[in-house]
Amino acid sequence: MDATRIARLNTALSRADMTALVVVPGANLRYLTGLDFHSSERLTLAFFPANGSAPCMVLPAMEVPRARDHTLIPLELYPWNDEAGPDAALQQALMPVLRNQASGTGQAIIGVEYTAMRVMELRAIERAATLLGDRVPGMQVVDATPALASLRMVKEPRELAAMAEAARIIETALHQTIMHIRPGMTERQLATIWTHEMSAAGGEGESFPNIVASGPNSANPHHNNSDRPFQPGDLIILDGGAIYGGYLSDITRTVALGEPGDEARRIYDLVQRANTAGRTVLRPGITGEQIDQAARAVIEAGGYGDYFVHRTGHGLGLECHEPPYIVAGSVQPLAAGTTFTIEPGIYIPGVGGVRIEDDVVITADGGQSLTSFERELIVLPLE
Image (cartoon, rainbow, N blue to C red; front, top):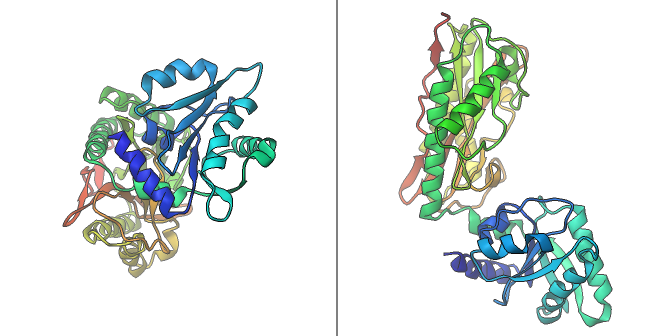
């Protein structure tokens, strides 16, 4: 299973003319090794040579037992302790990577995670290469994001099964949470209830701190939950996700507390139709840009294009935001097994907003929604 992932990684690195990949603790390390490490001030790096040589890992000595017990692939370990620091261990790990795998240009091309690697890790690698001096060829650092995305965007059946269960969990929790909404309850109170319901439904944690945005606050797509009490006529956006088997779900629904006004119903109808349009066009080979256009055209035709202020969706899997991105300029054809969100929205400052978000997967003959929660406007009673 994971040996196959390493073989696919080697192919992707070779195609990109990289001699090695280095990853930090996070989603890519979990994907390639099964190790669930977290970033800290202690240097932890894994190197994956493109030529098929054994991957290796520089890590604190205290983490060696955990790495040995939980890695799903053979890993050569280079431990270091707090007294000595990581420089010597990093040089030991880096030397064969640079010496034996330099490209035709005479340099080793090292791929890194541009959006995950910190300055601390990059400077440590550069310092180690400098200290190795004439013993190794030069080194060039490049962005490995496209190569990694080519591996992770298309999900394996077991990954899809975990995502489907994460979707079931968040929808079960959302149903229970909505039943608690009453006038006078605050956003923070409802958010706490939702977190509890996710855990009760079997979630391993939240994909992100859930969002509860009511009334005028719902015009802010990424509102910070507040102590605002719910009021009659409010639109209430609920955006949350659950983790299962390391994989994430992400759903948004908008409900009304009592009868909403005419404009609220109008923008809800547009967003619902935009969501449907985005899901309807799914097929192998479609691009993120085409999906974005399908959803956005509905809202623009309704006269609210200026109030749809974000992309239509984002990739979903081990991370809540990962490639592909459903937005203009995203022109890579999407293969069967690719997972992402479709989440059009309209946000009117001082009035309120609506967002309807689903998790979807490209299938062999179209697309499928992993989330199925009611998309018609739910109007909650005031009593």
